[in-house]
Image (tube, rainbow, N blue to C red):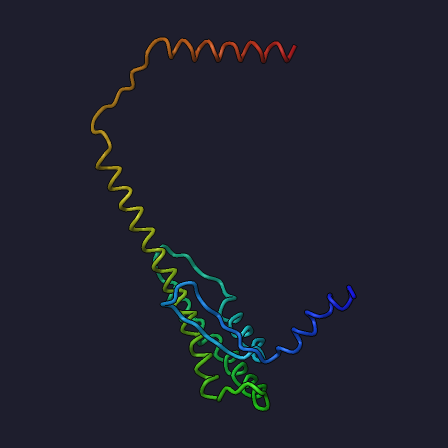
Length: 174
């Protein structure tokens, strides 16, 4: 009975080979793509090609441009993924026309560029926040010479505490 329980999820997963996979973002105003699970390996290959590259942090917001440069670099991978997806879907129960497959991969490219644009926005927001924090600090900072006056009892207490700690350390080393 235990073996049947362990194998049941495996058999259930095999039967859903053509289920629709949806990639959704937490923000409903952004992109959502849906495609049959049957073509998931081709989608993953294309997304991997787009994602696996060196990003250069240059001090300017240029991540959208870097992400856009990935599309021509991965054009061969995209063409292969589209062709393989169309071949896999040719006799499948799930129907997705070649123009829909083409649109799917176009949307994946747009999502990739949108992620770069989001990184640019975050970069610019952080720069603006840092500038605002600097401005707030400069405005609130006291001008001129600032002298910190301490009560003699505070200085004596600190001196006594450091002297006691030094005496205890000398006693431990003997």
